[in-house]
Amino acid sequence: MKTEMIALVDCIGHDGNKMGMMLGLKETELEKIFHWVQGLTIPPGATMSCVTIVKPHKKKIDDPYIHPPMGTSVRSDGAVLTPKGPVWFELVFSLSGEEE
Image 1 (spheres, rainbow, N blue to C red):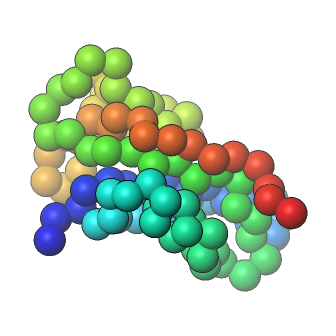
Image 2 (tube, rainbow, N blue to C red):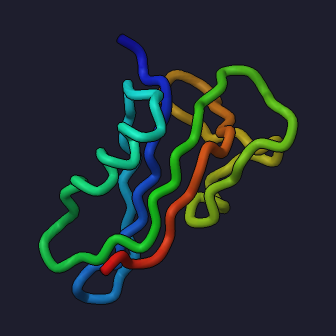
């Protein structure tokens, strides 16, 4: 089964350094994705600062989403280069901040 969406997970390490993960999702139902986000395991001592869910496209789209931490590695047309070629992101939703 191919990846339907991608989770871009931004964290801050115990040492204050920013780090991130890009995780493929096969789930497309938003309620199930929200539940998945709540159960994410991040490195010990790190704090999750933001989770952004995007839909990848193999063809250029109007107004592609550029994830701020990835800004310097994105092409001028908004594509992220991957081993399988360029991919454009469509923003689905983004959750930021800490939940109590």
